[in-house]
Image (cartoon, rainbow, N blue to C red; front, side, top):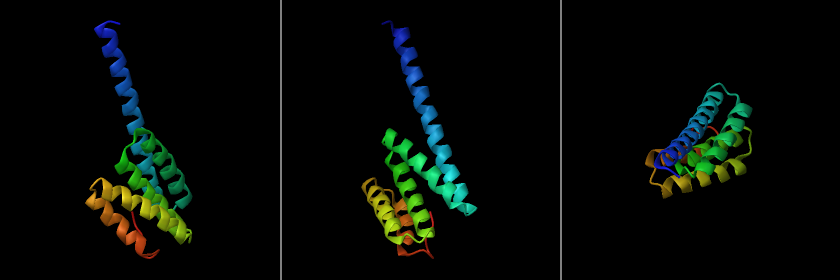
Length: 118
């Protein structure tokens, strides 16, 4: 394989990965927008799709953010045990990666449905 062929393969691989990152960011943004307009079914679906993509990329910050969004949806639907499960998963990841700002977003969510936000 020539150097040019290797470069072309590398460029294609990087572009494919960039497209996935664009899609994950778009899905995460959609989840946020749905949450702002109280469309929790849309928020849940977008956060689930975004979570799967971030997991494929092993991008832990995005995983933590989406776990928190999913917890928020469960909280809004009155499924507090399930919400707490997702909040705890999010908090654990955010602590492991040193995401202090993200931890601050999760802790109020754990307090209960009236203080939950993402």
